[in-house]
Amino acid sequence: MWHGIDLALVWRSLPELGQGLVVTVELSLLTMIAGVLLSVPLGMARASRYRLLAGPIWAYTYVFRGTPMLIQLFLIYYGLAQFADVRSSLLWPVLREGFWCAVIAFTLNTVAYTTEIVASAIRNVPHADLEAGRALGMSSWLLQRRIVLPVALRTLFPAYTNEVIFILQSTSLASLVTVLDLTGMARIVIARTWSPYELFVTIGIVYLLLTYGMIWCFARVEQRLYRHLKREEAGTRVDLRLR
Image: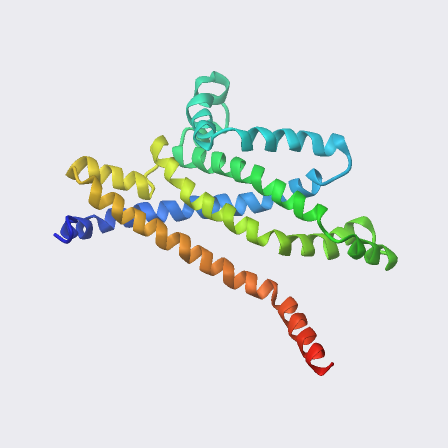
């Protein structure tokens, strides 16, 4: 015992918690990958000046950002199963699994937020950059690929880092639909040992380490994305000193 914590119990529980940790990482990675692949084209469409294109996407982001993720998860896992057409469809082998329902719910939620982040970053691309691209004779698609998206992706990176951390921490909701993630495995051990304090402290520490490990990784990537700006700033300081 150490300050009321049964370390022997924690040690014995590590293999089971490790299995749950693998599921948590899988949920997070699948959600992030699907979220990026979907949110970039949707963000471009959301930033479009054509209302017929941007309007439906606005409605989607409005609904998913305005309702709790837990309700969305329950509607997908419990709600869809009530329809006979769903149970007899080709999608039922996927929709009857809590893991995939969680991935779908988390992806739809994060795409709603990330789409708005991408759209906002696209709208904030400097007008001078766009005019320079047009002056060089770039087509609309080439302008998007060479100027708009690279500039927007650099500016949205800090905001997306926060969204990724939110995804990681929200995966604990998956345990409510029978998914044995880190939280789900902890609940099983707690039901067997009646020791909630030790287990919740342990998984809290694990989530903390995962969160700050992810922050460190994103900080390293952000440094690489912005290193050209640092070189420009250093050059400006040298010029000022010479003057």
